[in-house]
View 1 (cartoon, rainbow, N blue to C red):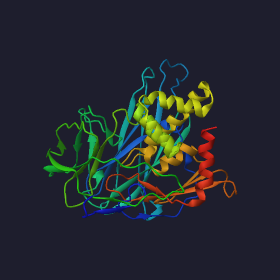
View 2 (tube, one colour):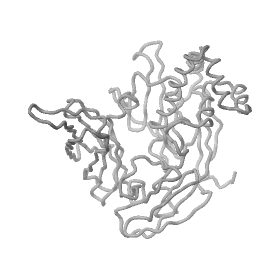
View 3 (cartoon, rainbow, N blue to C red):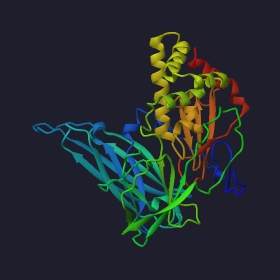
Length: 413
């Protein structure tokens, strides 16, 4: 490891210092509920200029209710999107709002319904955007949130990733065969610097165990440039796994990041993925023994059968466990796969919390009833990270040790 260290990291990767905020009294556990997830629209922001930000929204029509009126032959769905912008330093004052409605008359196919909203967000500000999606036929709504960062013209939301048809990528990861381009509303940009990192981050440690202090050097494994013409690059393809950080100014840390994980990500389909995530339920000796087995697929199957006691229960446990690993990838992926993160390990082993309270830079997860002596609470603090807006670290404590082993044992009964 080189000595010219750029950042110090504690836990998995702590690139900057973490900050906390006052917790709300509202329960946000639905945001990490896989049953609710299909009704939360995908969204992303692209700064249009110093005064306006465009928010792109997408929902799949297969999740909408199609009905038909009396004397009508066509089934139709109707939904609305409402966006409300608040300054992060004053969440009680509405800055701007906008809305639109989509109607779809074809329920014979599942397709993405998309739209966009312009929001008046001025530069040198940090904002919270509340998005309310309503299925007008169901008369049901769900709220979600998007952070809008507009401190400067170098940050990630000054760029967007699109495909060959100019459709946005709503997730920051790509597969090896996907082509994409980086676009910006700034037509003066002539090239982008790309920092490439081929890194293998360790997985999260149990909540009672403090991981070894680690160091991260911001110096990239390689740096190259891509040409920008009229606000967009040519189509790109990155077959090599790793982190690709696009920047207009290589002397700064701000930029737009593209991740190359496994091709099937966020799904868990390979034997390697299934084996790695078993580390949360195994002792060090058991895990090392699994790694030495020639037929790792048989070794994984045998582990679950021995754990479950019979094949049928083993199938149920496998489905439950790896569904949680996949869900963790969807919810908690940051600069590394979601299942490897602090929130990922807690979610996989404990499941969806009964209660989640959120603040500006903090999440508090409660398993059990509020103020119950039997409940357990985990607190995660947000980390400022030039690669991701979704990086949180757990406040670890030796008090979690007994409860952790009980939960792991519940999986292994």
